[in-house]
Length: 195
Image (tube, rainbow, N blue to C red; front, side, top):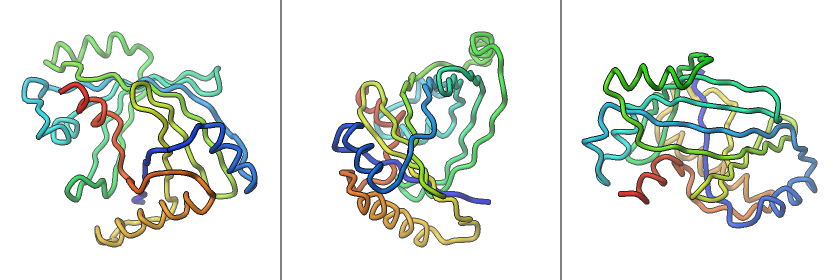
């Protein structure tokens, strides 16, 4: 099954967005803290022109704390398919890992280097089959991620991009003040600021 998602900027406070969604019957279902460390063997090649290319070779060490009690640690590889700068689809490979410090040392021994830490708090609002994950990203601001639960396997890129535009319209239909961007990439944005 091939799913798609959008991530866009929010031009209002989290509290304002939550209040709007509550009027439509959305409820808070989960809060979490995510800390991702991006590792690559291509750090020396990194430039403004090839950030996406380098990110596509990254391994993430992910620390996830859900609802202030459950802690999940894993190694993640995201295989993203792009059309230009737009993400068409993404498949994740995850491996549970109890010791992220040792995992870091292992990757370091394999000539991986850290290129960025991405840290953010997540609050998920849901109603029926809809979930909007608000992400308050350190040094970047407030974003909202919306995953479409339909299967897009076999769909053309144009169809997927058209669906992503509809997803932005749907977010706005709840009164949310969001931009028209649908593929804000956290690591890309943070690295761009540093180069």
